[in-house]
Image 1 (cartoon, rainbow, N blue to C red):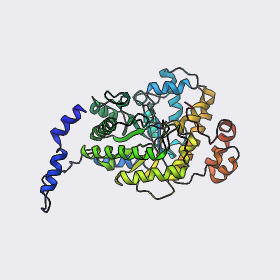
Image 2: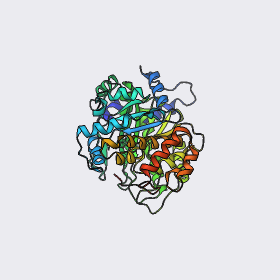
Image 3: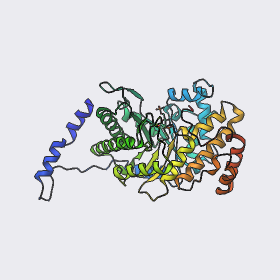
Image 4: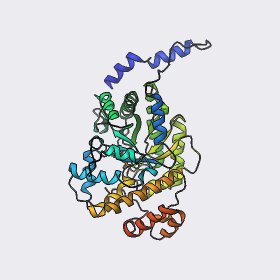
Amino acid sequence: MASATILKSAFLPKRSEWAAATRSSAGRQATAVSLTVRAGSYADELVKTAKTVASPGRGILAMDESNATCGKRLASIGLENTEANRQAYRTLLVSVPGLGQYISGAILFEETLYQSTTEGKKIVDVLVSQNIVPGIKVDKGLVPLAGSNDESWCQGLDGLASRCASYYQQGARFAKWRTVISIPNGPSALAVKEAAWGLARYAAIAQDNGLVPIVEPEILLDGEHGIDRTFEVALKVWAEVFFYLAENNVLFEGILLKPSMVTPGAESKDKATPEQVAEYTLKLLHRRIPPAVPGIMFLSGGQSEVEATQNLNAMNQSTNPWHISFSYARALQNTCLKTWGGRPENVKAAQEALLVRATANSLAQLGKYTGEGESAESKKGMCNHVSGTVAERYRAVLSSIIEPQYTVKSQRGAF
Ligand SMILES: O=P(O)(O)OC[C@H]1O[C@](O)(COP(=O)(O)O)[C@@H](O)[C@@H]1O
């Protein structure tokens, strides 16, 4: 926060000055403090990009696992964490035929943004040909936050402007910065403030360089707390995030959010139905998120594939001021990765598995997901609810691949 203080005192009114100016101007027409924000050169493009990503029936494929996280995913199927294996897996993901019907954006790790598929096509070009907007993870990961209760903060502001400019040149049009908040460890006021300030500085810098910032303060699922505690923490976190976004003159129409859903902690004795998750999460959004924000793209955070889809669907039973959709990593990729298992002969089946999840979440974005087909018992019902080629995909994939391992039970810890 040291550099933050310098920046704030240099360019913006202090809160005390602002309050004094507002008091002394009461009853007069003009205020003493000008809050006019110059329109950035990318403003129109940012708004357009954000709307494209937040388009009906589509969401984001998060495939930006850092090398450390990707290593865990690959280890779960017995593969080494090599560049060649990461390339093979990510080639599989971006090459799924018809993916762009359900996926509007794909978040890439830096390595992937500059990588080609195993057939030698630039991954960015493959995405664009699928009508998918390429995005880039720009944070540099989490490190311990000194002076806190074993909490962390997210690095990456140094050199961010020039990196964002290069990523734009390379074809990225949106960015992502993930920081985390731990409920069992507090969260301390320091950790929340640091998370919010970092996200706001990142968002301003990304917009200045033509990238729509995805703002992701992940409130981790870990813990024994109930849903009310998650709600309370989320209210605090989002209040701080929007306070600092505004202080940094971020254009709200040109951002996207990536929140955690409001659920009980993963180790809580309480369980919440999709309707309860939707009720709490929508209440949070209505209290904290301005309608100027075009899209809210949830992370899955360790929920099972089915839970994440059901919860999204429940949130889309009402008309909302924002596009409410998904930006899932695990909840899109889990079955796909397991089906692939690193074997070339499984690529097609794994791609079908990804398409099943993408289709299901697309339906959930529209509030039309039924879920019956997700279990063996009601497989037929699901097929009856989905028409045409989608039904064929469900039938083929569910019968040949998913059924043995696919249940509505939590798959937490699958990775
Ligand atoms: O590799 P990192 O930086 O730990 O991020 C892990 C993942 O968290 C996400 O932000 C959310 O993923 P989940 O949907 O699996 O929770 C992904 O975009 C990212 O791949």
